[in-house]
Length: 168
Image (cartoon, rainbow, N blue to C red):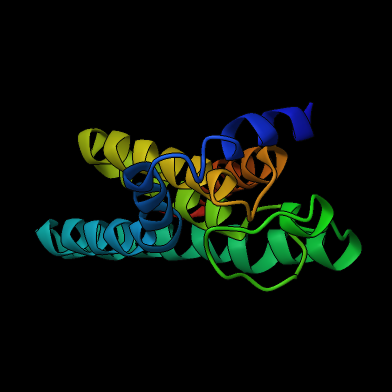
């Protein structure tokens, strides 16, 4: 199932240069836009206590998702990247480190939910862009669909847990 889904999404690459360009852009660079969007929201928050709370929620969620949970899983479990297993040429350069779970998905879904807790409109945009980033990383050949799905789950659960644990 994982391979079939990967082949379907990745099979769209290399057929039309504008779609390849979009996939490469989303996979490599959309994270910068997500981070800048969160910083803009941080700046727009007028109440100093709310600003500190949002910053703490966002940064702790990302650290828990990407820096702790993802790395613990990768320490105990190695899943080779699709371009190594299927011997395909990815559209972006990437190291041959383990692919499971996706650190990008974990970090940016954690950030997206943190933003969503403060501003639902911006949160939906960031969640949507995070989803497209995840699909793009499959499209360019550096992640399996399950990597993205589990990374997104880790990110969402991390933000939820930090919100519950962080004192208001």
